[in-house]
Length: 398
Image 1 (cartoon, rainbow, N blue to C red):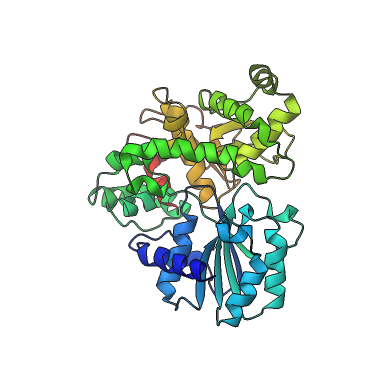
Image 2: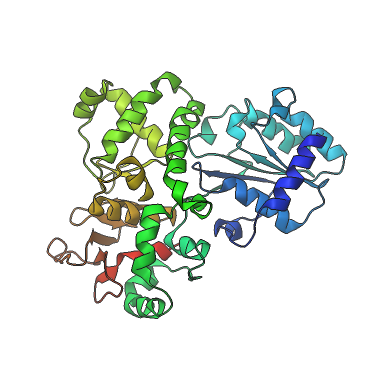
């Protein structure tokens, strides 16, 4: 245990706290069992370590441990918790719990047995908490950490600290907001950078190797993290990578599951299952028509890559600007907690009330002219007018 304490102390001492994700302020850290889920690379580990550093607890009171640490190959989590508590420990920060067999059952036992011990744990967005053998859904408070919004990217890149906006502010006052912000920085210049390489916080470490690292993230998700989903056959990872490659060259599109199956040699039910896995792992976004829900074996109406950076990583030199724009809009609205579905006219229906058509600066009202509460989210414009709103403003929602 001493090695864990030493390693925790070094990691906490080294973590920077100048840039902190917006989720940090949303979390009620007084809860006794907190879960932070998210895709690989979005900064869950950094968030845990920053919390440790900011609460400034003595090392004997708070401990960070990654569940893939060699320590856990011969030691049980529940034994660590008991010993840690006996020595005065009060908060356990457990990283990547899905890599520890039986994690849900042991965390439940710790929570039920030790009322004076708090646990904050992170896990892959691919895992299904509600399918675990131990019921944590009534005990834990769940949060999800997405990738950076355009607003967070501006802050992390030391460009500008923009205030978070609501959709209502954008729809009713977008011209004045855009005018004010355009005096502070160049929105389109930095927006282009964000679409290319700004979604994952590790862009700050080395831009030259950003896409190498992003490709590694994609492979780790498919080859490792999907393996923690019940029923997933790890031997099929090459088929999923092939499927992802096909999707990257065609999104957004209305999938023909039979043709995809013919190209990959995968049966129709298995293709649908893999699309479900890729969605849970936050590599794709799937949409249904208004009023319909997406189940594991139901064909989605339309498929998008989960965020714009994946376009450049999976289809370098073949990025379609229209696809990237739509992926950005959908990603930012969903990450901000809004309901998005396919519109009967236009591209997206948001919160069952607002219709949006996404396009370039010359996009007209032709497709949505007869629709109430309809707007254009237009790329390549700094300032909008009437119902034409700069696309980049929707990156300030979270």
